[in-house]
Image 1 (cartoon, rainbow, N blue to C red):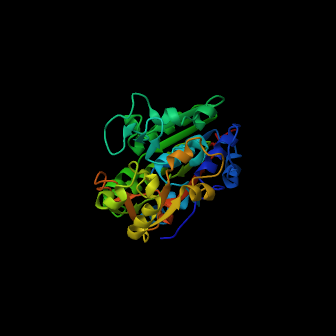
Image 2: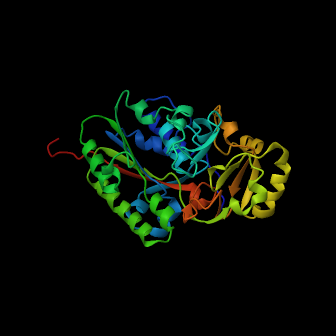
Image 3: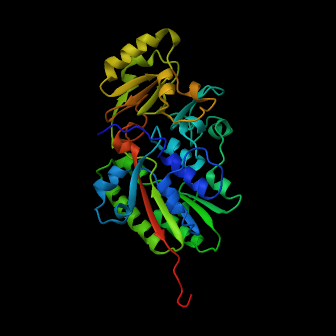
Length: 372
């Protein structure tokens, strides 16, 4: 395991800005030159397929060297911090870094509501209880997706596996992309598939179910590229995965009892809000138990190091990250309770397994008809 910092000049955010640039939409950050060069060929269809959790190291471990995805991987880049679906897919869809768009992790603290809320589900952390009768995350952290921006002047589509039953299998997404690609319009298609991430969480990186899913994805995306033309297909992940062991804060009352609220962000990138009179005690207790597995950063250190990204911080950023953020340097996670302790694999930290993502590109020129 190696430590890899996010490269905010060549990460998933910059890929998004290459897409914006190609479709003549204002950008927020630098684009990626090698992607720009490919897009300059001006294919009719620009297709981005994001497979959740399909990190570059896992590709190498599971697929053989002659597989479609490996052969067409042109580079490995970094995700954003934390390398997790909430932060990284929002960066892909917004063109902004996590510190800018605000979707930092799975669970976030909201000052107005004074609650820690699961971002995508609008529920209280570690429960099925609806947080509010409105979508708190989208109300507090609104953004316009690159698909909507592009769609003002070009044909644009989003295929999201959690939106329609037909997209819950990679084959359904592939069939829809092939169908959409046949129109004569210049277009952008963004497809999000929520595996292998779901299987990785449930079964771990070495399970046969996970390995079979990688092979299924490889086969399906090769089929996609064999059945379209005048298209460039960019395939990537939002993050990788690592098998984990969990610390449970219930077992450390000297720490849990001096917190103002439950932890937030992610189990491997953990935000702590501490009672003001216990700040020094917290640092002592935390390092006594966890210093071999986590590095503890103060709020000021997090902001100074721009670990969540460059650009103007979201107005809520400082209140969300709490007093400290613990960054994992091993395979450990920190959970408040046994809720979710059955998860075998996680992500959200600076290890190469989690941070490195593939950029796979397949160009399919227009088929020339005889006589033309």
